[in-house]
Length: 303
Image (cartoon, rainbow, N blue to C red; front, side, top):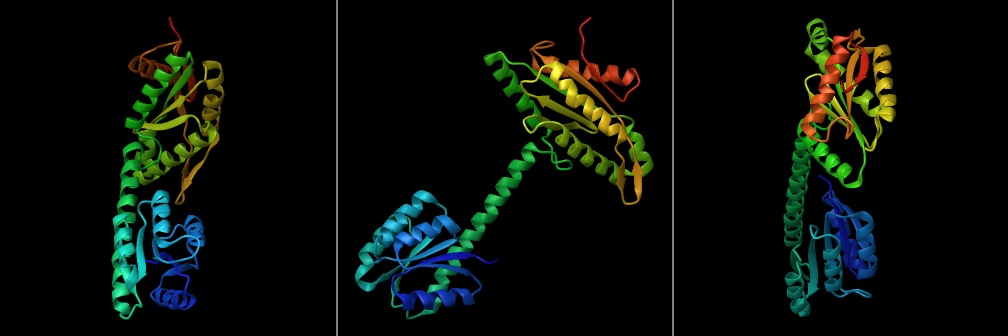
């Protein structure tokens, strides 16, 4: 793995020597001849490791350390110091430096060992952060369609009900079901059925606004929450989705088919003020759409 290392030293000979040595190890090296320029390059290049001399013009190594710590607490810093500067180096360690090495660097193996340890720690941190992000995404998204999942939908509904009650707003919801989806799986196979679900997710995201929450409810059912959208406005994208799916050809690996959808809608607070009831009424409207011929949108009506 190639890492980016920021190297700061006001001695051109040492800067060139260490820069070439690190590049020969396969790393990208950014150099700075003083602390002030070094901090600017840190902000620009976001390196994986910083190696800095203690005594530099404009901004010394300790000041560089403190400033970088304020900008990013995860990046390790190795301090280079002359024998007479060990007290300062110890102060740097107290302020969070990863290690310090004394100049002249008579044994480069010691230098490379310190760099390797710091970069190994950095790689473990990057892998850990990547895993945390993946777990966070898995907790809110459906792995097949990459839409929000059922769990996240419940949170969206709770938040939108609370916000709408507080500020006197309205919102609409849609429950969507792919008509005769079992036949798609039976005729074309489950991989093609998965393709249909993924394409359906893409079409929904393209038709509805970025501020709307498009979720996979389960199986071939989808759920869409439209914040601050009354019924008369919600029917526009809802009908557009029905019309789009009626004409759309699903084509994958030499197989193709067309599908239709049934869509049931309900509004807050016009139809319900509680989450369970609102979802239930949208489901009832969906049932009505299916019962009366499918391939249509039906909004819940009282009576």
